[in-house]
Amino acid sequence: MMRLFNIFPDGPVRTAAQAVTVVVFMGGLAWASVPFYDWFCRVTGFGGTTNVATDTDVDILDRAIRIRFDASLERDMPWSFTPVEREMTVRIGETALAFYEAHNPTSRPIAGSASYNVAPYDAGFFFDKVHCFCFEEQVLQPGETVLMPVSFFVHPDIVDDREGQYIHTITLGYTFYEIDLPENAEQAALDLTIGTD
Image (cartoon, rainbow, N blue to C red; front, top):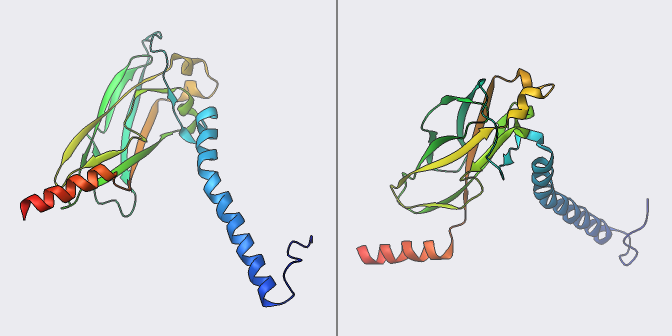
């Protein structure tokens, strides 16, 4: 094994230095893996990552496909979050609109952001989002409820794909997780608290 710590004498100091280096290196890999994996999924459609539609002028086919909607929350996220409709049937190529409802039942403002995926994974390449609330900061005030739209279509190329042609149901799932409040939201909450005293 290559000697990396010649500046340290043998013994506990050297062992501690090596342990710290390994922890820092592994932490760096963990930090870099999230954006790299996200980029990889967006480019390849792997993991059920959808496309973002740049052109909605596609053929609308007579064939229909069922879209299911799923919603979940990270463990410590106190919101309630559900799809307004559990499923819908749309024609392939047709732009559709669905809504999710989020509610903040707490007495404090909470910021959240949503990640998404599509199942089966093979469908991600053909599921094109026109507009979506995912990865956008959402701030809900105490007791606030909002409807969040997602506009999408299933690209007609799915019917010619070797695996895609056998897909009859696609599930679009979102997971909301809590993020830090923006400074202006924190100040607005503080002003509201002071104003009610």
